[in-house]
Amino acid sequence: MKNILIVLLGPTGVGKTDVSIKTASHFGCEIISCDSRQFYREMRIGTAVPSDLQLNRIKHHFIRFLSVKDYYSANLFERDVYKLLPGLFSRNKMVLMSGGSGMYIDAVCSGIDDIPDIDPAIRAKYNKKHSEEGIGSLRMSLKLLDPEYYAKVDLRNYRRIIRALEICETTGLPYSSFLKKEKSIKEFHIIKIGFNRERNDLYERISKRVDEMVEQGLEEEARQLSGFRDLNALKSVGYREFFDFFDGNISRDKAVELIKRNSRRYAKRQLTWWGKDKDIKWFHPDEVQDIIGYIEKEARV
RNA sequence: GGUGCCAUAGCUCAGUCGGUAGAGCAACGGACUGAAAAUCCGUGUGUCCCCGGUUCGAUUCCUGGUGGCACCA
Image 1 (cartoon, rainbow, N blue to C red):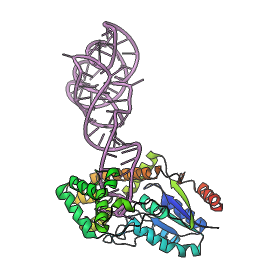
Image 2: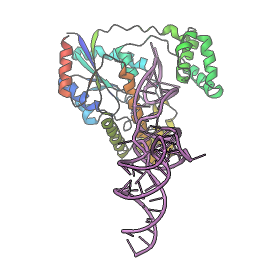
Image 3: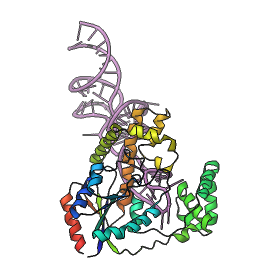
Image 4: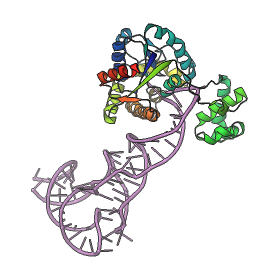
């Protein structure tokens, strides 16, 4: 039998953690977490990392292994996962990856093109240019350096433009020349399972979970991280809203309300990301037996 | 019980001197290859409370209901 990577994915609050642990204990496998904010050890409450009890029951990887000050990316995640997998497969033919970060999941499952690393100073330079001269200036540079990408990129999205520009500048080649979309050949089989539930149900769960986070001390966690608010990791739902409250821009109740709303919007964006992925087999998180049955059936192929 | 005011989108409300309606918030849909819980784009979703009347035509005017609010009892 070929090695198998079971991928469990779904929007925030759908109930992934529970099913993942049930599924992993059924197959006796370890879990690779794929939630880009659960990577940071300083952010525990606001990112809903599994409880100590859950973490003790099943071995988890990539949970709270970085500091918010560390640079990390989908590329690095792919590399780290590939480093880890042989060891995991030597213990069990099945490994389970669970999470909600679509791009990170895709980086592992579909691969990501090999593009040189960039100097952070270059990104800083373009960010400065953006805030001082506006997006028009970035567009003009891109049109010159990479007309092909200019023609297809969302010209109102400064992040995309800056990403392309920093690659152009670092390599001296157009960004588009790196985008080969070659699917890497995996020496393991992937079974993708998605979780969803009725929208109202999902939103009620999100709302309840935010209330629980607040009870557990999210405000205090955010206060301790307030000094790092400019770091990308802290531009996350649950933290940025509290920073606004600390600054006196909004009330505490309003902050909590916005955390709920922004979580809903995040869930929607996640679902949009997966909407086009035909490999995903969708389940309700309560259908644990069906999920296990589906995995067993697929594993024989 | 009486009088007055109100009833329009999921919510708060605007509006139509009679030609089936629009703001904010919420919501919905989408894009996205190294910052992705980020970043960006698009979309009014409606028995205008109900039954009648006047009218070519009523969400709008009129009668009567129903519900809500206020005041008087």
